Every structure is written in structure tokens, then in C-alpha cells.
Length: 161
Image (cartoon, rainbow, N blue to C red):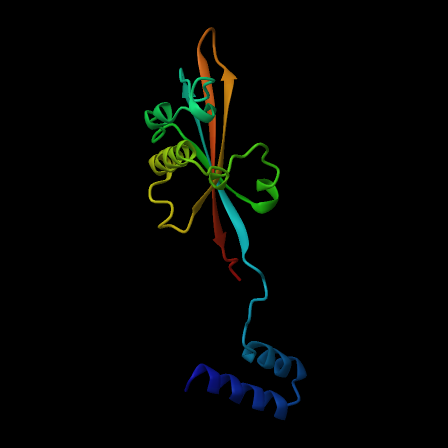
């Protein structure tokens, strides 16, 4: 006997014996379950502190040194976390890949995509896309300088019922 048939037989018996609670439970269980929840955007934040670099440079076109980005090795020392859209909207000064429309800008986007692949592997294949990045110089110890790099990947995560 199938589950559907067994549930229907149980419901009929519950009706006969006037077990209203069991009748309602059988009817509720038999209803198709449709999720009305909207999938929420999910964002992966990837961070890395580059030591002794000049990624942000006054002499580089658009202020970002593509060459220095290419030499970074974040594979082991990066961190990541996944956040929801309400946290993402609070991130300030995020540069978008869509904000570049010339050759040097495309080189910067390509460099950031390559850098992101070093940290996250083939992120596109896993359903993520590059949403943007933030690069800023921070004070290091003594004369050492450091650059904080935050990369943001966007992806849709369907809620589980």
C-alpha cells in the first residue's frame, strides 16, 4: 500500500470514529507543500591582509596596481564568512566590476577576478559572482605597510524548509 493510500484510509477511519483532530492532521499532511519564501541573497566576504605592498598607488592608473595584485598569494592566509543582504548593504566604499569601462579598468577587474580565484577557486562554477571589492592601506608595525583587501561574492541561496 502506498503512503498516499494509507493516509487516505487513516483519514476515512478517523472520519468514521469522529476523530476530528486526526482528520485535520491527515488533511494537513496530504496538502502539497509549497514554499512561499523568497530566496535571499547571500554574500561571501573574503579578506586578506597583504604586507609590504603598494596595491594602492598614486602612480598606478586608476590608483590600483594590477602588477602588485597579480603577485599576491592569499591561498593560505585569507579568511571568509557568509553574510546576508542586510549586512552586505552596510559595507562602505565597495568598488564594483561594473564601474570600469576602459582598458585599464578591465585589467583591474581581471586582476581582481584572478586574485579571487586564488582564494575561492572557481567561484563562478559554484554559483557565486564577483560583486565588488574594497582595498585600503592600514598602518603596520614600524615602517611596514599593509593593505587590507575585502572581496565580496554574491550568490542566491534558496532557504531550506
